[in-house]
Image (cartoon, rainbow, N blue to C red; front, top):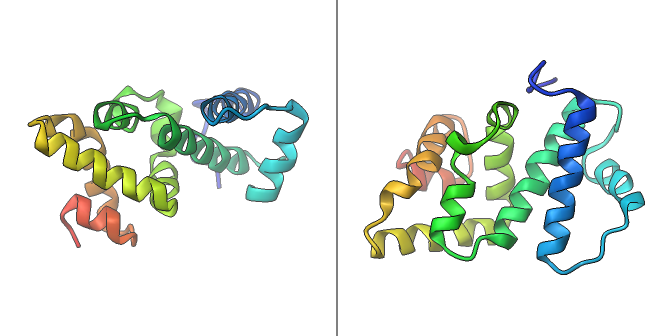
Length: 152
């Protein structure tokens, strides 16, 4: 399976994964060693020759970076709004959503960030992620997404 088609080459996708991986480690104040990226991707997602492996890695590391970097609801929802993503990222949007809901801190951040927006009358900032959640809500089994999308 290959979600991004010709929107991005596997070479460029690998570079994007490396960028997200480095951003994540910078955010968590960890020292990166480039030789550790491929073993980590292989351990988490499998065959490094498959483009879909790198799509899953991109979704994972992007989402982990957002979870660790978002200081408030404004930043979180801006980073999780598909309208601001590259076309290839929009093709892996459901992988990004799955990575968000697979992480307990991601779910906590989603809830807390949305409560922040409601309290500050800024709920329109959540429209992009809310639309994505609704799009996925019909088949996405994560209770947090179904509840957020209003389909559960």
